[in-house]
Every structure is written in C-alpha cells, then in structure tokens.
Image 1: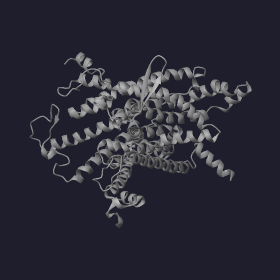
Image 2 (image 1 turned 30 degrees about the horizontal axis):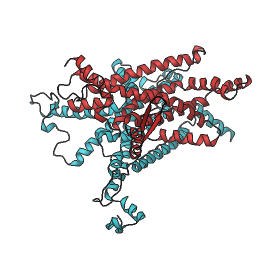
Image 3 (image 1 turned 90 degrees about the horizontal axis):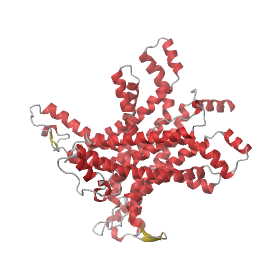
Image 4 (image 1 turned 30 degrees about the vertical axis):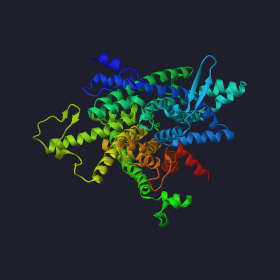
Amino acid sequence: MSCLQSLQAYGLRSLGIGERLLPRQDITLCDQIVLIGSGMIWNVYFGLLALCFGFFFAMALALGKASPRAALRKPAEWFVFVFRGSPLFIQFFLAYEAFVLLPRLGFEIDWGFFEITVETRWLARAWLGALIVLFLNTSAYTAEIFFGALRAIPKGDLEAAEAYGFSGWSRFRKILLPGMLRLGWPGYTNEAIFLFHATTLVFFSSFPAFQQKGDALYYAQYFADRTFNPFIPYPIVALYFVAVTLIIIAVFGAVQRRLNRHLPQAQRTRLRYRPTLIR
Amino acid sequence: MFEFCAEPSLLETTRWFACYLTNGVHLLFYQSFLTVFALLAVAAPTALAFGFAAASAARSEVAPIRWLGKLYTSMVRGIPDIAFFLFFVIVLDQGIEYLMHILRCPDWTEPIRQGANFIVCDEARTPPSRAPQWVHEGYNFGLAVFTFALVFGAFAANVLYGAMQAVPRAQLETAEAYGLSRRQTFWRVLVPQMWIYALPGLSNVWLILIKATPLLFLLGIEDVVYWARELGGSRNTTFAYPHPDWRLWYFLGLLVFYLAFTRVSEIVLGRLTRRLSRGQPTLGGEAQRQEGAAA
C-alpha cells in the first residue's frame, strides 16, 4: 500500500472517516505516521478548546481569589486547591464515573431556525466529558498563574491609575488586565504546553475510545502492541508533540512581544521554560 | 475481621460497613497505598541521583558528555511524560532480554525480531517463565520504579542545572583564586550552595511525582486505581457483600487521599525552605535576618 493510499484510508480515521479496520499485518511506516497524525486531531481539539474556554474562566477565578469578599474568595480558592492538588488521572476517573451515573435525558434546545437535542449521555463521551475535565483543570492552573501575576502588578501602576481617575471597570480593562497578562504570560505559555501533553491522558483514563477513534498516543500504543517494536511509534508521537510545542512557543511568543511592546528591551518579561506544571 | 461478620446479609448498616471495609480484598486495597509510598520512597532518591548526574554532565568540559546531559535534561521539554512511561517500560523489558539472550545463548542463529515478534531463547526470559508469581510482580514493579526515576530524573536535572547556574559566579571565582581545582570547586563550593536555589523547583518535582503515581496503573501494577476500580464495580447477590456501582465513591476517596498528601507535603516543604534559607544571601534569608534583628 502506498503512502497516498494510507493517507486516504487513515487520514481522518480518528474521526471515524475512512477505513474501518486498523492496519493489522504489514504495517508500513506511512500507516504509522498517518494514523498517529490523525490521532493528533483529538489532542489539538482538546488542547485548543480547553485553552480557549479556560482562559476566560481562569481570569474570573483569579479575580475571585484576589477579591476581599470571602463569598467570592473561598469558592475560588477551594476550586483551585482541589484541581491543582489532585492528579488529573483521578479527576478523569471521577468525572467519568459521575457522568455515567447521570440519568439518560435529552433536552430540546430551540435555536429559532433549527432545534438540537442535547443529551446527557454525551457527557460520558470523551469529546465532551474529557473536554470539561480538561477545561476545569487548566482553569485552575491558569487561575493560579494569573493570581500570582495580579499580585505582582507594581503598586505604582495602580497609584498612577488612581491619580488619572481610573476606577472600576476602566481600571481593570486598561491597567489590571494588561499588567496581569503581561506578567503571567511566560507561566501561561508553560501551562499551554503541558495542557497539550495532558490531553494524551484522555483515552488512557476511563473514557473509552469508541470504534477505536483515539488520540495520537492511543494509536501509538496500538502499533507498539501489534508490532512489539516501540522504537517507531513512540518517536513519531514525540516528534508530533515537539512540533506542537514549537508552534505554541511561536504563537505565544508573538503575543508576548505584543504585550511587551511598550517596554524598553531590558524590562521585558522573557519566555522561560519552567517544568512546574504537570498534573 | 470481626466475629459478627459471619453472616453479612443479616447485619444492620453500621456493622455491615464495618465488615465490608475490613474484608480480605479491602485489606489488599489498603496495602496498595503502601505500594504508592514504596514507589515514592525508591523513585524520589533515584530520580534525584539521575538528575544530579545529568546536571553535572551538562556542565562537563567534555563535549559528548555535555551533549548527553543536555539531551536528557531537555527530554521532558516537548514530549508528554506518559509517552515516556509507555515507551521505557517496553524498551527496558526488551533491552534486558536482549542482553541476556546475547550472554546466555551465543549460538542462537535466528534473528530476534521476526516480523511482529520478539523472540529470545528460553534461558533469556526475564524473569524466568517458571518463576513464582511474586517474582513477576516484583520485576514489573522494579521496571516501573526505574521508569519513574528516569522520567522524573529529567525534571530534577532541569531544576538542578538551573540551581547550579544560579550560584553566584563570584563564589566560584573566589574558589579558583584560592587555588581550588575544578573538582574541589564543584564539591566544596558549588554543591553545598545550590540546594537553596534548587529547593523550590525540587518541591515542585516532588508534588509532580506524587500526582504521577496513579500512572502506575497504566504500567500494569495493581495499585490504588486498580483496586478502586475492582472493588467499586457493582456486585450482585452471589457475592458476600452485594452493592451497586460504587466506583464514584472509591475515586472520591482517592481524590481526598491525594489532596491530603499534596497539602501535607506543601506544608512540610514550606518549613524546610524556611529552615534552609537561614543565613543565606537570598531574599528569604534576608527577611529572616530582619525578623530576628527586630525581635
């Protein structure tokens, strides 16, 4: 089978499109590269969506944690403590068991021109259930980074803002938010990298891969089991993830430069790799 | 465990739970917590040793050793740690069998890799196929511990390398000025001073290590996750203690266990940091000095 054929058969296999049976005999290098790459679709899907939704929730949590009001501060503190203090692996298991126990219900949602039925059984599927867990998890980690950044904003900035008559929303929008993002960005970059690494846990915890629609590591393990040769599939996964990491660093680096563009060269916060964030 | 446990179906709730939670399989479940602690007790020092060796190698004068150290140090940078876990366990297993094969069966002519098979002679099987069950379990656990140490050694190497760079340059120059050799400078000046810089990072690695212990389950060890799944599954009336699907509660228990464990670690490590920063020329040490002076 040529490479083009493997691409046609397995390019979108992780979404259920293409050849139904996974390669069994005569597994070629192309098969492995294509199928593992197809699994990466899931890793990118989980990572990207969790990151996007988590960003906003994390800001709310960070502000809650910094709030002087106990009614806001306590829930945010507990949320961050629970999700940062326990293994993501256990969180996946717990969430899956909880979602499976939910009653099987369907809700009709009327969007005006079309209706969709939202079903609770979707929660027990990886595409929604695991996404929710990852979203909550990354929110907690990111909230801690943003909270630290919020506390590191120079006092002088806030005094200057007061002197100029900023208060409430405009003070947050013009002073606190940019400062928080600028100071927290290097940490947030690391969080993004490790979030993408954490997506590999999805199909290894309890969420089942229906019809063998799995992520990159799932297929890599499939090949390692089948060929009994770990030296090909795992390095392929590794290369894919190195590529994703480089893309993240490039994109976040561009944002970083934009956030720091008003500062003299020496004062800019640098992107530094710190392996502090793994679940 | 208790005498009244002879006929569980007749017991009222409290006693039923007392019997249920102390039956044989539950005692195995509690033992598996010891597995977690055993893993940490062995893997943490080994990882630290690997990290130290790699960090020193990354500072070496000899280029190949330096490259090797740097490669190992940056290994965890772009690749998920689970990939390493799955990879190294197979690689170690096959590597050991391959070595034994070369040593014990030198006149074996067939290739070891035949298509999708990995075939070694019988004497090279590790552990031997006739070995008792506990040898197999112990061997698997050993492989798992070594893999943990290897992966987290890379994390520790990252931290220690940074800490070695953070020791003020003037200290090393002074040592050179006093005529200390490279080796003496390393062991008598650099190493004693780097720990305070390494401690925040090492605390983090420790917390990461704790939170990675459920991954033992992926490596096929009968750990806490295995037993929680096993015991929580619903039991019908043919069992002594029938109950519906309780896995949710078992995992909730594990969550609380890990939360408590990380919290206690955080508190202890916080104390240790305070203790070690005493008299150090760092911000923390300076704050302690001023407190002492004020009192």
